[in-house]
Image (cartoon, rainbow, N blue to C red; front, side, top):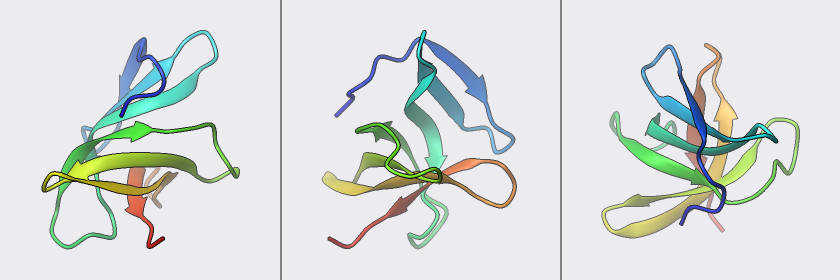
Length: 88
């Protein structure tokens, strides 16, 4: 599922670890990422699947119960990167 290599990381305030591909500083994956619009306080490793399609979102994918869930990475109100799934 991983598209970009993960070279450098940094921690968020909610203890998720954001990995970037260098030297382009493209977001590659987020470990322990909060799945914001799914029930419960679920956290998974979320992989970026492409370059940002808008200023606010990056297409991404994760696995929940063995199934691939597509969505996007975006920021929440506190400055953390979170995953939101899409119905399509």
